[in-house]
Structure formats: structure tokens, C-alpha cells
Image (cartoon, rainbow, N blue to C red; front, side, top):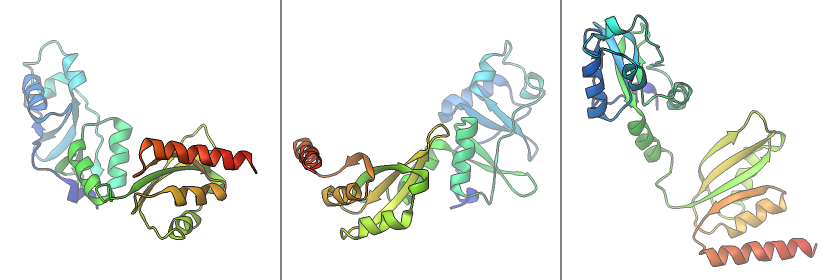
Length: 220
């Protein structure tokens, strides 16, 4: 899914001749803390609630209030992951989307994007979730997939979390079964660390499984 497919029609852009007061009113109405600003069809930048609240006279127009505005945006051909990365980088509640000539096409709001991700990333599919930790050098999606499939299951989706101050990564797996005990034991036999699991087992059953695993480990 690319940026042009993410555009929502629910949030209109401001014009450079709109007042700061109008900008704040629209932010409240559309439940966002940022809005794109245009001059004709040209993208001027993004105005935020925080910088508006620092202004003394909100009856002035945006072009009088601000000589320059930050210009974060996504290109129409950017992948959804690139769009999300840009939103995270600039801490935006929405992101303007521009064409190859940097003309404004529309914008994508965070809530709209999260809904799309939930619908397309197997999040709504029935299944269990497993968080596996390993060193970056040991990461192999082929081996992870083999472990899951050896237990008659399939990976529906996955994502990786890493930190610049650690040599380890966490791989979160959405798996098409709610019974993860056998899969967990197989991962542990391959010396993977299970950080968390979310499955069908009740708390007592999960606690018993962890206790049994500890006893087995101590008996080695």
C-alpha cells in the first residue's frame, strides 16, 4: 500500500490567508494537532497546535504569524512503512502527501493509518502472538518460519523491534493458532528467548507451563 492510497478526505488543508483562530478551531473539530497549509495548490508547510498556542494574536493570518513552517511530507509513491516512519520522526497527527512536483494531493491522518494497518496486517485474524528475542547476528526469518511450520502453524505477520544501544532484537510473530505451547518449547530448544506470549491458555495453565519448563531446565 502506497501513500496515495492512504489519503483521507475528512481533513481539509488550511490556506495561508486563514487565521490562527480558524486553524485551532479546525484542529479541535477534526481531532488533530497538525494541519497542512497551502498557498493556492502549493504546499507551504505544517502548522501545529503547540506553535499556535504560543502566538499572542490569533486573529492574524498564518502568513503573518509565521515566516516559515516545517515541511514534512510523504511522496505519493512512498510505501506505508515509509509514511509511518515519517510520522514518527516528526511526531505528527497527520502527514501531507505531495506528488512528484511537490503539489499537495491530500493528507493521511494517524487514526486512519492505524485502521488501515489493523485491517491489512493480519491483526484482526484469529491467532496467538509470540515475542521472541535473539541477537541481531542470529536472526534468520527462514529458521523462525521453519520452527513455526514444524508445529503445523503459519506466521500471519511479523515485525522487528531493535534498539541502537543493544545487540539484540525482538521479533513479534502473529501465528494462526491460539495454542502456542509446542511452538514455544521448540523455540526454547533452539535457544531462543521467549519475551512474551499471548494465547488461549488461562493464566493458571500458562503458569503451570512455565513452572514445568523451569523444572525441566533444572533437571538437565
